Image 1 (cartoon, rainbow, N blue to C red):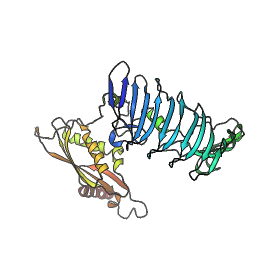
Image 2: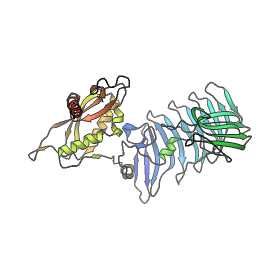
Image 3: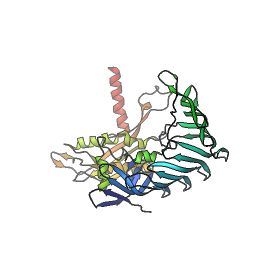
Length: 402
């Protein structure tokens, strides 16, 4: 399947056709870091927004979502969401960017989980049906209990909303809390209702370590809030792919011109360029891809630099799996404007080596880490590990004598 992604730049008839990729948190990224891809349309002007039909897929080419945005970028009409298996996850309608009417949510096995009626503001709702994964009916026709997470975010805050409905109205005790919370710890809000009428509520005050009562309903909060909309509609960008933290010019160029951001190492000497390469690679945005806790990495990268300063030949050896090697090759290929190596102003054509390995601090502080987990760090360096360890140990001993 080859989807397309269409950009509409106001004031211009030009259109770019390509695929838009997202990472697991629905930030726009380059393909190696993607968990999803999309085809649809974007308008880029004073405001950026999606318009028209939008269809999302898992990287397996399984449909993840289908729906439509209005001419001004609001979700309108029917939306459907799917599990990686292809089974239905949720289905319902939007009006003016808000969920409205009856929405159905399903367990991974295809069985109905919730049927929820939304009143068009994403906050006021009624749980009409609630069936757990074992088939037990917890709510039916607007009467019964529920407990659900508020967000489906990858890095979720893990807060839940627990409550009861009677004939479609809020009833009994409602709580906004963390899993395992007690009334004294973890419950942020506790409210009491009687057949839709708010009776009383209390909010935990962390500063004073106790609850404060209030007389007006506070638990007007979105339920089952989708991270993909919060993040993708804000055109959030993956910091591995887009390094500009001052503005989104790099993302705009990528969306309009499909020009992938490069890492410039322009400088006055090869040594300075090489230092910039190592400094960039050792940023946590890159090293996080090589931090499997049970793995001690060790290997090297051989590169040859073209006359224009681009890396044209790369050979990677070491104990990387295929995906890790793909990441590393992708990172290396993004460096541009590397200053040529010269001796007495004569350019030298040569392969250059970058070493990578896991630094195990137990190698330097033997006997200090007996009762705690290993402390390790992934490092790109100009020295192989054995040489690095000798020099680092020498420096530590010298510092200790001082």
